[in-house]
Length: 66
Image 1 (cartoon, rainbow, N blue to C red):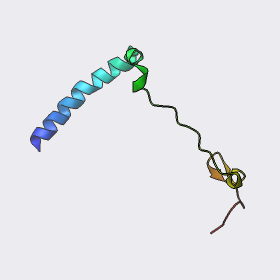
Image 2: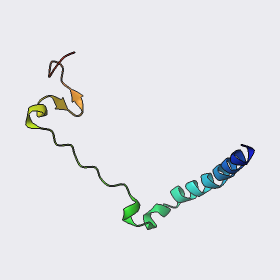
Image 3: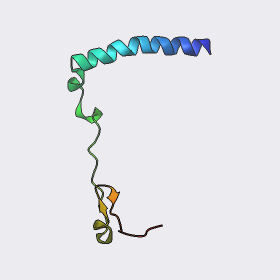
Image 4: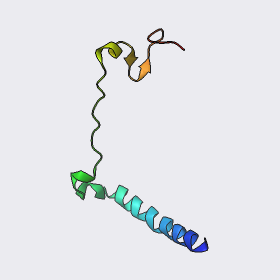
């Protein structure tokens, strides 16, 4: 366990300045686009559910109330 904690602490000590430098100098712009997250496709609802769901929230009185 002490070995793990030692490596963990050294990892934080090294990672924090590297992350700050990457953010400060915008170094991610030099990486290829495949590292960026893919845009998510919108969910296609069946026609009978289009009227029930607006922006992920159900309308009051719409659908089955339990």
